[in-house]
Length: 252
Image (cartoon, rainbow, N blue to C red; front, side, top):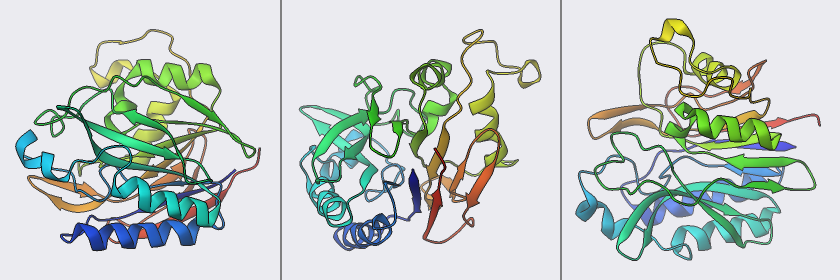
C-alpha cells in the first residue's frame, strides 16, 4: 500500500485553508492509495466550549467532505481527514473516510477524548471499522485513541495493514515516535506507573500513518513530527514545524 501523511496547519482563513489542503491531497494522492490528514485539520484544535466551536462544525456532507471528495476522485486515493462534526445538537471530534470515487464511506468519531476535546465534544459512538482495499486493509483512530488498549486490541484482532491516524499531538518531553511505536507494541509496562487496562491485549502489527499539525493552539503547542512507522521500524518523519507530506510504499 502506498501511504501518505499530510502535516498541515489550519489557516485563519478557513476557506483558503481548505482549498490549500484539498490541493495538497489531490497532488500527493496521485502517488498514494491512502492519504491521511490531521485531526481537526481545517478548523484548528483548541476551542473554549461548544458555543465557540459550533459555527465551524460541519455535517458529514459539508465543505470539507465536498472539497476532499473532489480531491479523492481526482487522484484515485482513499482520504482520511479530521473535522468537527455537527450531528443534531451534538458535536464530535470526527474523521471522514472518503473512497476513491469521492464518496464518504464512514465517519469515525473519536472515542477516547483528550482534555481539549472535553470542552465541546461528545465521546464518539461510531465504533471502529476496517476497510478492505485492493492495496490492503486499514482502520482509523484519532490521537488520544492510541492510549486506549481497547482500540489497540481491536486493531490487532482486525489484522490491519495500516492504521490511519489523524492527530493533534501536543508538545511534551521525549520522542513521540518512540512513544507511538511503544503503544503499538505493548500494553502499559510496569515502569509507566499506569495500572493495566487490558491484560494481554494484542500487539498491533499495522503501519501507523500519523498526520499531525504544529505550532500554538490556545494553551497547547502541537508538535508536528508527523511520521509513518511500525513498532519495528520508522519509515519517514517530518520536522516539528511546517507543512509537509510523507509518502511511503509499503510492501504487502
